[in-house]
Image (tube, rainbow, N blue to C red):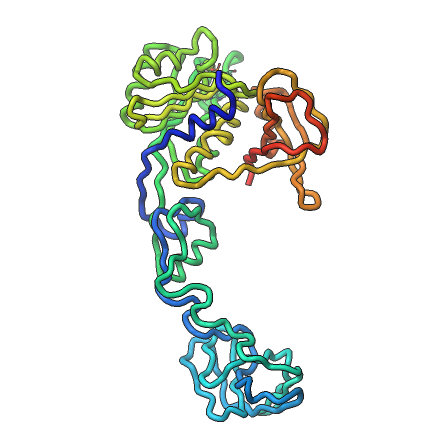
Length: 398
Ligand code: AMP
Ligand code: MG
């Protein structure tokens, strides 16, 4: 048995082979950038007017009440006009180029417009006022984004502004998600009294799709020879196997044995945690095949994905895990020498993330997860956890 910290470290030390692909920028959100994005021109590309108003030469401003005759109107999308007389002004629109021979923009709010004239209502007009200078945000040729950047709508705006319709993103490794157990039937079947519908592969695949991770799904019956044959096939076609079920101490829990017989070396079996204690993890000798064999209890499978597998795959893309924390709102006692992943509902109050325990019926009670936002990680060394204490938090809702 290993501790939660050891299990995390062992998993993190194994790297998946990661390829990349070109995708349309609109479908790139949530993926991880696999190229660097350079500025193809200055940002902004010209001295940009930042407010609607009039452009003047600041050095010709004498004081409040001064009148500037308006020579012309500079609209956005039009090449720069030239101010002929420095005692005059040009009416300018946000997003337009700053007219030549002008050095400041006075907002409409700070002037009174009359027929062909503007009267300044403020006491000072400094050079540079309300101008977004060329190249101030980024210089032509500079790196705007690095490979390994998680893509949000903000990055999509940058792709578009440098003229990229598609970008290179990392691919997720080729992955099979496998449920196991004779008691499980398909979701469109009516289960007999002794049967249940499979839910784990669906929750797993849905959790994976949240980050764009596609996978194939399979099911194994509790028959060792069949399990071994199917595993052998899947170890050829897929690089990552995520199994759910069949790793505990039951008579029909053949998965660890079958994997080891196929040359997948165990890196750990059993983690001192609840839920998810029977978790098994191993790789092929050359580490090209990576197997996560999770306990079948729905909450265990769920927790293990968010605690271990999601941070692991992000780490493979070069994104370091940034743990969150939340504050307990009630005393909790838990005496077994295990790390306890407490189901909690969370709420932000005065900028602090508060965790309200909502334990439900244990690791088989996945219906309880509907009232839960994540897990609070209560360390194994302690058995009494007090209101106000802060612990690592693993969210599963965004
Ligand atoms: P196991 O880890 O195979 O001993 O399974 C533990 C418990 O989880 C049993 O009650 C199983 O019926 C249940 N279980 C296993 N796999 C699934 C699944 N794919 N969907 C729903 N429940 C499952
Ligand atoms: Mg089973």
